Image (tube, rainbow, N blue to C red):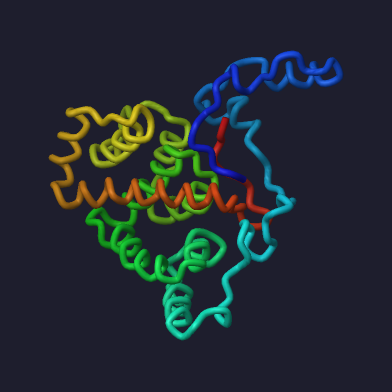
Length: 249
């Protein structure tokens, strides 16, 4: 499923003067304007997209995106070294069927990107639990179905509670959320939403994390946003049989 970065307005989603034959269908699907995802158990959650293995016509079956799966034999010697380094890192949750495989189509970019990605993910100063939370904050901020669905199980494994995941997923209030968790969520909401982070939000995060770690966190959120663009342009599909976990209006 494609990630969407902007919610279309109600005026854009309903086209005037549709033929009478499909008017009833449009009325049923467009009876109200788009709204933020509702709480679990709501109609919005029940209407979440289901798993499907039917691929768009321009998507390759092996990679599940618009470019074929990279093959080691297609590279020169330097390219093979880069390929081996990328494929030898088992920390990439999606393997080659995701952003890591896509970037290998530009070996030099992949070579430069790998240490930056590793630093932001594993050496950012907040630990694996809050890093996985930041993954979800970024995925929700840009409505990245692929990134969310890959990382929700990983977040649970690292100790992020389902309750906290649902606060991010359904954009619930931060009542009762820990200080550091709330700071990460709030920065993401303001940066990806109105695209203006308040002085109060910034100061709280700075006091909690310090300069270096805060810059690492913000850079990580930005890194995930550019990854989201890559996934959208390449139309990266979920793994076969995987149910989408992120409700997107």
